[in-house]
Amino acid sequence: MANLLSSKLVRIGAFVTLIALVVISAVVLVILKPWEKHHDARNEKPDVQSYIQVPTTHGDVKGLTYRVSDVENIDVFYGIPFAQPPVGELRLARPERVGTWSPAVKDATKFGNICLQQNPMYSSMTNMSEDCLYVNIFSPRNTVGANDKPLPVMMYVHPGSFRDGSAPYFNYTNLALKGVVVVTTNYRLDGLGFLSTQDDVIPGNFGLLDVALALEFVKEIISSFRGDPKDVTMFGASAGSAIVTEMALSPLTRGKFQRAIMQSGPGTSYWASYIPGFPNPPREVAFALGKRLNCQISEKETERDQSQALLKCLRGQTPENLMANITELTKKDYNSEIIFVPVSGDAFGFLPELPSELASNYTTMVPIPTIRGWSSNDSSWTIDDPFDKGVSYDAVATYLRAVIYALYPGDFPTMFKTALDIYNLTDSSVLSPYDVRSIYIQLRTDLFMESFIVKEARQFSKAASELAVTPDKKAKTFVYQYDYRPSYQTGPAWQGVTHMDEMGMVMGLPNGPKPLTYPVTNEEDHAVGELMTTMWSNFAKYGDPTPKPLDNGVKWPKFGHTYGNQSLLVIRPKPVVREYDRDEPVVLWTGDSGLDG
Image (cartoon, helix red, strand yellow):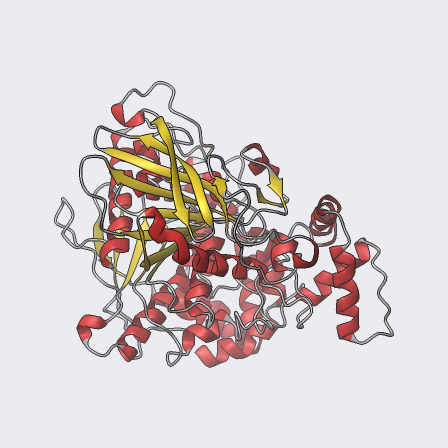
C-alpha cells in the first residue's frame, strides 16, 4: 500500500486544489484580552520591579524584571536580534549571524518588529518590518534561593501557514514559571521566507534557516539567562509544528536539540512542503510574482540567468511594494491559496528530500523524545456551515470521490468503496445533514492532521527502537488527543474542540498574569491549563510528561510503532489513556499500516 501511495503522489493535483483553501492558516481562533470581572490572585499583572542587565557574547542586554510573587520573579527580554537584518543583498538569502551590537547595551524592554505578512491583525501588537529576526526570552528567578542550576530551555515556533503570525502573540510567563526558560522567535514569512526558483539562485526555505540560526544563537547566549544550552526542547503549533518536525529531520539541524513537541502540524503532510507534481510549482509562482512586478526577464536567457534577473528585480523593490504584490498575487492569481511553502531538494541542503522520505530513512534519523498530537475535531473550523444546517451527503461524497481519484486513479472503484466503508457513508438514507457534518469533520481531521501525526509517531518510535543501544536509552514518543473545549472559545458549538484550542492551555494563560490573557469563566480552564503547563514543562525537564502519575492516577504511556502497542493520552479535565484503534484511515491517507515490526 505504501508503495502504491508513493507512486501516486505526483498525480494529486486535483486533490491539492481541493485542500489548498483549507491549509491550516493557524491564526489563533479566539481574541486575547485581559480579565475584566473574574477576580483571583492569579490574575494580577506582575509589577515591573526593576531593569536587569545581562552580559552576552554580543554585548549586554537590558530587560525587565517582573515581580510575580513573594518568592518568584521573571526576567523578560524582548526583541534580541539573532541575525543581520535580512534586507538589501540579504533579502531572499541565507540569514547571517548578528555581530556585536551597537550601542553596547541592547535595549530589550519592548518587542522587536514582526515580519512582513498579509495578515493585518498582528500589526497592532508591534511594528511590521522586513527587519524582524528577533528572539524573546522569559527566564524565571527564585528570589529567596539559589539560581545556580541551569534550567531547561523551551523554544517556541509560532503558527501561521508559513505566511503570517508572530512570536509576540502570547504571554509565555506562566509556562516559564514552571521552571523552564522560554524562548520565542520570529522567522521570515510568505514570499520573503519561502519563495524559490528551485535552483541555487533563490533556493527557498529562508524561514526554516532563520529558525535554525535562531536555535544556534540561543544555544550560544542562553547560559547568560540561566538556560542550559545542552537541554533544548523545540515546540510549535500548526505550521510551527511542521517546522519543528522538519528541523528534527533535516541534516542541518537534527541532533541539535534534545526534545520536540509538535501540536497539530505534521511536517510530512501534503500541506507542509511542496510535493513535485502538485499545482503551483515554486518556480512558476516566483516568476508569476516577477511578471506582476514587471521584472525584465528574457526568455532567451538560460534558466539560471532568468533566476538571477528575477532576484535582482525582487531585491530592487521596496518592502511595501513587494509585500503588496505578493498579497495581490495570492488573492487574484491563486485564489488566496498558500503558495509559498518549504521545498525539498534545496541548494542549502535543509530538506534534501521530502520530509516524508526523510522520516522513512531510519539510518539517518536522530531519535529524540517527542510529543505530538491533535485536537478531537481539529479540522472542523475548515467546514463552511454558518447557519448550522449541517452538510449535504452529495457535497461530502463529491469531495471524497475527487480525493480518492487523485490518490488512486488506477484502483479508484475499489478504494472509493473502501473510503465509503471507513466513514460509514455507504447508505445516505440513514444519515442526517448533521451526521454527515460529523463524518466530514473526522474525514478532514484524518486527512490534514491525525493520520499523518500517527504515522510520524510510528516512524519516530521505530527509529528509536532500531537505533537505541539499550532499551533505557530509547527516545520515547508520546501522543495525545486534545479533547477539552475552553470556556472562552467563541466558535460555533458544533465545531467542538478544534484547531489550536490547546494553545492557551499550553501557555497557562487561564492562570494569569495579564496582559494577553484569556478571560476565564470556569475552574476547568484553570485545571486544564495547569495540567498542560505541568506536562509540557515536565517533558522539557525529564523527557517524560508524567514522571509521576497525575492526580487521578493516570500516567502517560509511550506510543509504540506497532499496532496494538499504541497508547495515547486524551487530554481533558480528567485525562484518560486509550489505545489508538483507527488504523484504516491511516492506511488510506498515508499508506502506513503500523502493523510491521
